[in-house]
Image (cartoon, rainbow, N blue to C red; front, side, top):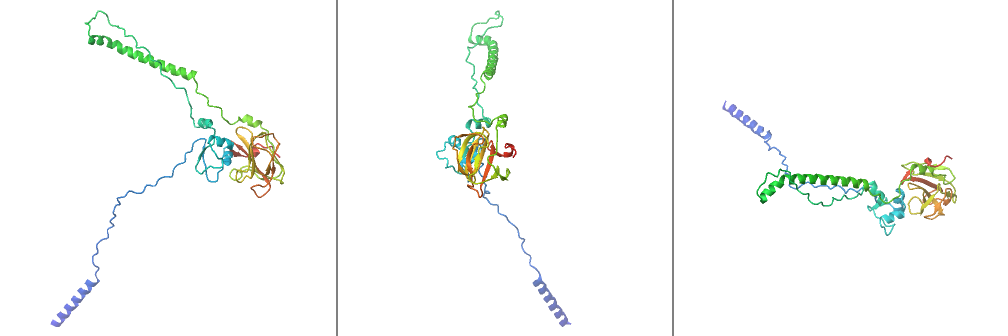
Length: 318
């Protein structure tokens, strides 16, 4: 019997040991202790904003002064003058240039000047008059005199103030009527539509149109032809530019027809006019070629206020 009890005790002890070995010990919970950083988050500065003023342009990579002038319908020589450029070929990226005449830019921005209203000249102080009955007399003293003058003095001051305000208002009204705002010096302005409609146009060259106007891809029309073929002015005007200073246009002629309309003739083999020449409609200005392009053709543009427009709006039907 004692042997059974001792054997049972061994079995119980063994089971306790096994249970202790297989039990999982208690583990401390994992606490995510986030230590707040004492340093402030980095502030990301926004890039500087380029000022966008009326009549001003910021030079971009690849720009030339002549191309900028063409884009805004101006003579590049005027841009040189307005910006005091010593070297027209030395403009830098992010340089801000004036592309409209100073007077035109000021009017476009709503800047006006007016006459300065001057206050009326000083007037002598009004004479204080008594209005109380003279029977109420007091012995002379500074306080008595001040007391007698106070009511009339206040009224007189109010009357003088009203009179002065009325005079100032009247003077201001008179100034506005008689002195209108000064008119700024005359600057090149867009010609009236009626005058532009009077301009007579013709095709600048004979040949097949191989590319039509597409504002996003082609800023004008392309006319195929033979090398040396005459290129003529599509309308009467003045040669504003003759040279090869604009990349992608080759030998280029620009003719100004009005304050807002000009025409451009690109890829010529040679140019037969000079800047400043006055040309008539149909007068030869160049010979067709393939300068800065892969085929012999004339690239022809009409620009209004510097913006390319569809030449078919102006040219006669063929």
